[in-house]
Every structure is written in structure tokens, then in C-alpha cells.
Length: 254
Image (cartoon, rainbow, N blue to C red):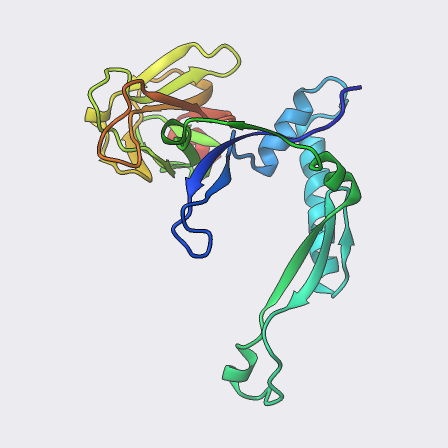
């Protein structure tokens, strides 16, 4: 069995703060962003799991609700990944009748790594990647029809993306958004930047055609955006790991 080991891409950022001014600090380049539903779908597709998505979703909901109750009750929760411990911030003010005194303390939860996770992170493989190109990413896709995030796309309505390096400067005809058939990466739709409703470094709003075939898709963005005014010569590409379901407005309401 292959040893579990962290293998991450990193970019180097130069510090402007003293006493470390001029030094390089590594930052992890996220490969993706997974919701609980994404994790459940991955497990359900694993034949060794033996459980369908609905069963896993029901079990996960029950587990997380129970863990939340334990934390709210003042108990710590020990998990394979680490320990969640209730904690209080700030200094104690004995005048508890005053709102200002109570605001000095906030309820929070501390997380400490488990021995298992510490071992997996003990000897990481870190690969330096190009800083300018690697920061392109999509974090969330909000659908105007269903009001879901990273789940659905409604034909004939808009989607709003949040992410980084999404600005469509440059001249490459490859720039824009792509919808790919889940599993095959067949390009079904290319939305060019000229048709975007809004486009900034952190947000894109685009309309979805009414005639887009229904089905399951992955969303891809292609951009030449960098941290400087000069665009990339070769566009960067980022594909969301989440699967988005394309349907009509009425189906999304059901």
C-alpha cells in the first residue's frame, strides 16, 4: 500500500515585512475546493465503498449534527484528522450584565492535528510552480435559478463565479469559460469574455444559453491574468473538480 504523503504545488511570495523583508515564503496552490457533497460523490463513485450517495449524505448529516451538538454542549470531539475543542477568546470582564463586557469574549473552536495527520504531513513533497500562472482558480459558482453554490446551472439564466485571476485581459481566443461533459471533458460550450455581464479579477457573471444540453458538467476557465498589467503569453487553465448539473428553472425548483 502506498504511503500517504502530502504532495503540494507551492508558489513563492516575497515578504515586505520586517525582520523577514526580502525573504521568500511558500504558499500552497490549491488544486481544488471540495464541499461535503463533492466528497460524498467521490466516495459513492468508489466501488469499494459499497454505499450510495444518499446513504452517505444521510450518515454524514447525522454525524456532523451530532458533533455540532457535542461542541455546543462544551465537549471536545476527537476525529481521525484531529481534535475539535471548545474555546473562548479575550480577557474576562466580571461585569457580565454589560453588553460591552460580554463582547470581549467570543465562543470558538480550536483544531489540533491528530497523530495520523501529523505523520502524513511530516515529509511533504513540495513542487515550485510559476507564481503568475498558478493563482487562477474558481472557488464558487452561484446559480441564479436554484440559488445553489457549486451544484447546479439553470439554462437561460446567469451564473456568478468567485475566484482569483479571473480578469480577461490579453487577446488569446482561448480565453473564457468552458463547460465540459463530466467524465469525458468534451467541450460543449465556450463562453467568450465579450459576452460576460461582469468580469473582474475576483468575479465573473455570465449568461447560460437556453439551448445548452442538460447533463453533468465541469466548469473550466482560461485566462491570461497576472498580478501585473502584462498578461501571460500562454493562457492559464483551471478546471473545477465539482460536477455541476444543468437543468431548467422548473426542475431546479423541484
